[in-house]
Length: 255
Image (cartoon, rainbow, N blue to C red; front, side):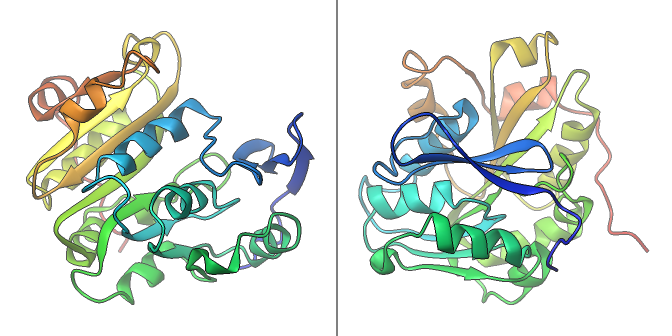
């Protein structure tokens, strides 16, 4: 899929070597070529916090990114965990071509971009391949429906190793009908869940990014709580998630 109807532009972010990749009018990625550890968007910084907590600091990861855009998080993982092997599933070849030309990443970063949609790319990976799967894919401001179904989550669970984590970036607002359905689908395949969000989003003051982490083993709730002072956000463990985001019906694949 090349996405010929998508409006793609690269704009100067106001500091040397920094750029915003904008798709369909939405700021999709902030990339600092001089400092790949700079995560400008708050929700991306929270995603980085989760990745930092996966295993010992600096240890290479096997990461799969569903949605690539400017490759902000793959660059971050490559910089903070040298030797990581990363697969990026990005179906829009025009976006990837623009990023390769204007925002190239070092050849030694071991980041491989595959021009395929998320479901197809995930299905092609072997069992237990990844330490982490990151879902940060949007089409016209929404996560594609086929990436948040119970059937898709079954594929992710197969691709993750026993201690692996599935990290999802969702955009929602109270009463969180969409997120409740995603959480219900995840519970069918992952024993443990947690969620982070800005307090204003949880208090129904505005829409925002809700990051859900799912896995079979221990999740980084305590590790993230220790970082809240630097970047305030709420961390809900599994019990908190059940009380605040229960009652949903999983999204099914369309017949």
